[in-house]
Length: 313
Ligand code: FAQ
Image 1 (cartoon, rainbow, N blue to C red):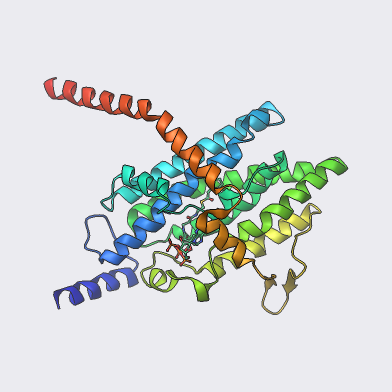
Image 2 (cartoon, rainbow, N blue to C red):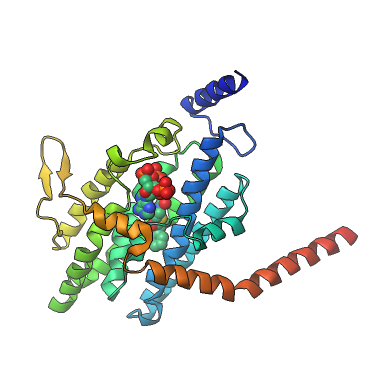
């Protein structure tokens, strides 16, 4: 009875758009859903540095190298905000990493694809960050306070990322025949994985109904996917690129683009760990974590020392 009353009050708060804060009462399933989603989001930001990091030493100019380096550092920062937001739900960061390394936690499917040419860096910024922004702008309105506030800061940086990617695509599309072909090839390979980022269709989405009711998610997977497609197709066509979907067409009466069938077998295969880069991405993360242990030990020792000096001062 007590619990039913608490649940009712909780839902009333959500319905009134009042943010839920870490010390507020929340249903255990709400807490678990947030832990899953926010930590997976954080892992995506961190693992997402790998495909781009692959091109840091081969960026075609000092300018493009500086911009890419700044962008990748931003992604690390996003991961850290998100781990902090997830930690407010009572789980330690070490646990999140353990779940990731054991394959119990996911990260976005899109980061399991390889970056074969410099144009892929353009395609990631334009498409992957473009898709991420659509999702994250929506998540600014999520009901959990720390997640919502992290999203506000992240979105400001993410729009710069999308522009740096599009700028690379514009330059290549207006360059030599070979450069334009490179841009087209990158779009061909990244278009479908970017669309898949939004997750399964609404009818097959296990968590959407409850997450929408609790306003953890503010729009459904399909609504967000459609928004992304509607705004991105024009950008591609504007620079003379074509999309690898023969069924993509503008529907005047709905005011949206129609698109072809998504290959869900490919999506689930990647999600389950059998994509082109899953093993490599995870192995690299484990190695980097191991190699960085001396930094963590040093930081902890420094913090302890500082605390003890402050106590005695
Ligand atoms: N990849 O019931 P739903 C970025 C899983 S950040 C892998 O619809 P939900 C920045 C899902 O976890 C990109 N797994 O799930 C950047 C669930 O499995 P589970 C990351 C996926 O949570 C750019 C199952 O399928 N953004 O890119 C995927 O309600 C460039 C059923 O699905 C976020 O994480 C997928 N794509 O909706 C960084 C945004 N989709 O957990 C570097 C926050 C679904 O029960 C470079 N997350 N699954 O085992 C969300 O908005 C949601 O979690 C969704 C999925 C929309 C991803």
